Every structure is written in structure tokens, then in C-alpha cells.
Length: 117
Image 1 (cartoon, rainbow, N blue to C red):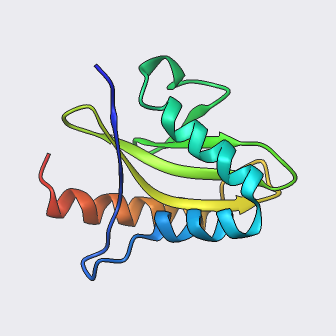
Image 2: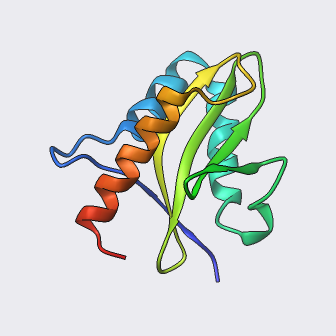
């Protein structure tokens, strides 16, 4: 059974990960293609490990694409074989900042409050 990838939406209907991916497609089509391929691979459980995916904390995970700038999509698992993508970032750092983890965690908590598991 495959996993379903969903993008978090705010109460007002914004989709931060889609916005991130749209900007990435415009700025760097090669990295965009690599991230989209990575998201497609996440549908299969065998890719839920390094080097493509890594747990970070608080039941959050990162889809990793290493390039000139590291591109990451932070996500969590939900009931029903679902993966909810909540935050996208690009940076040179090897670690995810506290601020980015906090944003992802807030979005996860918001999603869970509106979609009881």
C-alpha cells in the first residue's frame, strides 16, 4: 500500500509548501525536479530512511535534497498512510534551525487540531 502525500493548508487556505515549491520551480528547476521526485519516492515505505528521509524530532521528518543550497521539506505521518508536508526550506546549513522546526511543529499542531487523528 502506498502513502498519500498531502500539503498542509492554513485556515485561510494558504498552502505554504506549494508556495515554496512554486518559488523553487521558478528559481531552480533542477532542484525542483529533484524534490518532486523525492516526494514521489516517499509514497513507498522503502524510502522512509536515509539518504532521502530523516527523522528530526517531535514526530517530524525531513525530505532531503543536497545541492548548492540544501532543500528540505518537513513532514509528518498521519493515520491512513498519509504524509502531511508542512514546511519547505533552503539553506547552506547541515542542521535545521530551531525557528524552522518550530514553524513545522506549529503547522503540524494546527493540522492535527483541525483533523483529529
